[in-house]
Length: 320
Image 1 (cartoon, rainbow, N blue to C red):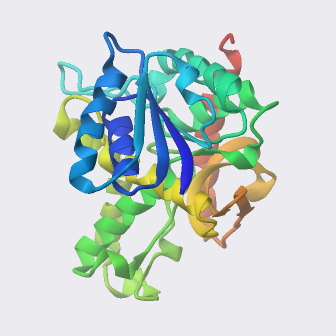
Image 2 (image 1 turned 30 degrees about the vertical axis):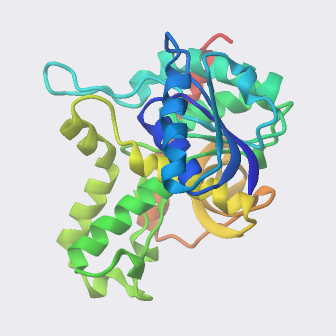
């Protein structure tokens, strides 16, 4: 069992993370930080704590508007940021449009981590994900090594891909293997050549036209949920995905997991955080796997990396 997990941001994703951590008995203590007044984080933790006798969990929960509650955390899940919300005209902002506002929030998050738990593993969920992880790296590079700083993107994107494939093929989600690479946005790359159903190529089950539609839906899946909800974005699946990463590290599973990781030459990329498959174990990112891609997939990944690079260039221009 982990001694302490800290969650930053008590919105929908953060709230599910706290509740699930208690339900799974994943940590002895769970801390929540949220700046909302009057005592939003305390109230959310009290609500969950009052339910722990029902589920038989002795998890200790503590909420605060300030960051000292992070002290001693071994894992930090960062969900802090403004979510995508549907505009009156029916459109909604892209993840990149959230950048300016969420960078300011991210700087406060980084300062709290640096002061109170610089040795923690950090899993970031806030959008635009690739750029926010990059910003955290710039702020924390002297404290948090890159193998301990991760973005939650690939787990969720790949899960969506798996679900759509299983639905189309009429099989259990447990029979589907799939991976999505690249940035967490419209340029993400579902890797059809690596998609398998019960070890067999996905093309043995699903026709070309349907697969193309599934891959497009995967790239747009976050927006699909936003459009239906109207306010906010997906929250249960991102929270589960973040906890999947935490569990793989905490239990030293060495599970191959797609995450937003720092690349130092892999896939021809240097100095960016991009979605790739990694081995997650007790040291965080134990190994980055370079899988064989088709020529079309290589081109699509290069395009996605360029999109990440452009967004990170905006981060570099932003004042600290």
